[in-house]
Image (cartoon, chains in turn blue, cyan, purple, green):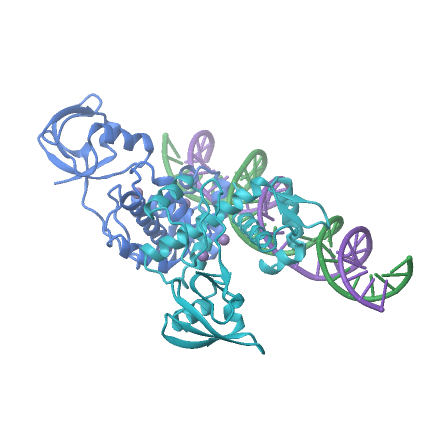
Amino acid sequence: MPSHTEENYLKAIYKLSEAQPGVEVSTNRIAEVLQTRPASVTDMLRRLGEKGLLHYERYRGVSLTHDGRRVALLTIRKHRLWEVFLVNKLGFNWDEVHDVAEEMEHLQSPLLMRRLDEFLGFPQLDPHGDPIPAEDGAIIRPQHRLVSDLKPGEEGTVMAVKNTSVPFLQYLDKAGLSLGARIEVLDKVTFDNSLEIRINNNKVTLISNEISCNLFVAD
Amino acid sequence: MPSHTEENYLKAIYKLSEAQPGVEVSTNRIAEVLQTRPASVTDMLRRLGEKGLLHYERYRGVSLTHDGRRVALLTIRKHRLWEVFLVNKLGFNWDEVHDVAEEMEHLQSPLLMRRLDEFLGFPQLDPHGDPIPAEDGAIIRPQHRLVSDLKPGEEGTVMAVKNTSVPFLQYLDKAGLSLGARIEVLDKVTFDNSLEIRINNNKVTLISNEISCNLFVAD
DNA sequence: CAAAGTGCCCAGTCACACCGAGGAAAATTA
DNA sequence: TAATTTTCCTCGGTGTGACTGGGCACTTTG
Ligand SMILES: [Mn+2]
Ligand SMILES: [Mn+2]
Ligand SMILES: [Mn+2]
Ligand SMILES: [Mn+2]
């Protein structure tokens, strides 16, 4: 049974390796995202390596083993299913669920997760548009584009967010840019890469590059 | 923030003190129900005492402080609300929920529990007939009688179980003695205190003293 | 090749939970 | 009351998990 901390490490390593496929994940990077010291990370990496959850060779970065990837994906599955529960059943807003799910993802009952999945109607996406891994670890890579990659004239529907911080999500709510919103890019300011967009064939707004880099759309 | 173990200790101490009001809870008794050694218990009692969660004077037994009772009742509240969720929403049987709830009761989000309570329709009783403490710790002491205290000719409705072990609950299911079942005592065998009962004005069965001591009824 | 950057290793800390043994204190019994 | 039994505290110690600063080894880059 993996500890809470181990699950958090594996999840972080999985996400980092997804962000840059092929590249091994570095100690400093892990320390950064987990808000801890490199020495602590090395310590944990050694232990996870001994448990066969990742390939650990000193100085070479790490990559997850099959088992490690499974634990990571299962943890992500639990996290996202609980988020769906919180939003769809308990009436949480999408900016309120992250911390709670961060704790619930460590519950250890496969039966519970199977029944929850069924209760929720086998959702495929969490409230932030992220795909929910299956029990066997299968996960669908969604076909998204970043809004920042759109050219003037192109349009799309908001499908997911890259960032789940409270201020960002609240900004999106206020701007009318929740999941499902229709976006049309009118103009791009080359100086700072901000975009002029039309939302839902209606209001025209200017969004910064910081925003457009964290929003996914599809046609 | 109390640790899992601390919450388990406080819950156990609360239940023991409820079982025998007025009597201080003894170290050995706690060790017994928590399946650990008296030395470990003394250790934890000292720590909980320092934290102001219980009154601890060596050799005198312990009793909970106001704060300690609050933590205990909150833990029990969480446990029982999750049990209701598991049974009413996820389709668990009442004999499957205990271990899962034992883990879920340690989640630390008051908002989550408030929303869950609302989602469940503010239930007053858990699937075993036990009362659910309010958020402020208020708890209704149900007016029950043990089946073992019934005399021939008396009857009642099954309202709660004293024991939540899997074999006991499965026995009750099979015998048709779930919550709500109507019982009429026909005869009592003075030798072993077993009872001949009629269930739901229908089948006549013999139940042992072991069973009747763990079943509550009300009129 | 040298400098800069990265990450390992060491030695240690701290918190938590647990335990056996021995003897002190309290309760019970004679 | 005295002796015996029971309870349980104290002590010293174990093990695990997680974290850390500092020094140095290794790798990368210029
Ligand atoms: Mn977490
Ligand atoms: Mn999410
Ligand atoms: Mn518990
Ligand atoms: Mn219960």
